[in-house]
Length: 183
Image 1 (cartoon, helix red, strand yellow):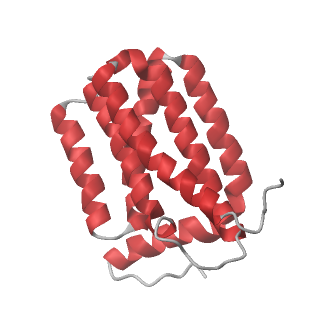
Image 2 (cartoon, helix red, strand yellow; image 1 turned 180 degrees about the vertical axis):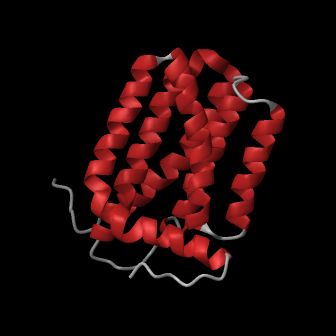
Image 3 (cartoon, one colour; image 1 turned 30 degrees about the vertical axis):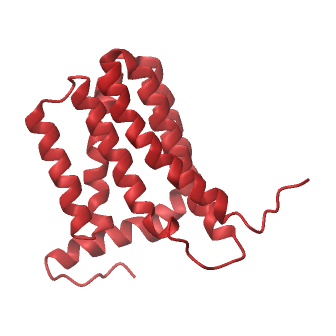
């Protein structure tokens, strides 16, 4: 039996849900194994990034143009993953309680404001901190993450320029009452 590539939304939804589960798993890795789980935490983050990279194109490829409940909550899956990285860093004692709390409040604050574009840099902050830790303690895994990010950047460069950056700058501009001139 062959997979029907016309109906890819269920697979996209499964990947999105798996990212939520892995976000909770990252917190669990920090609580149970702490710093010893660093390589596994990085691999989990890479797997989360892969699911995030693939779920959108799969959902858009589906011939049924209806957005599912899971698909409409993709940003919450991203939030959960970023919170999971923050929890891993805190429980592994790479972050102080004060810094971890500030990141969590910033993440939740941008989520409550429903500004997904403005949330992107804040969502990235735990990954940057994790990257710093990985560069110091698990160099191979840092190069693996960099290779993946460069590959994604090369594949998504056009979309980054035409969609993500204009949306981000438009959101920043709206904070200050500035109209977008990026058309």
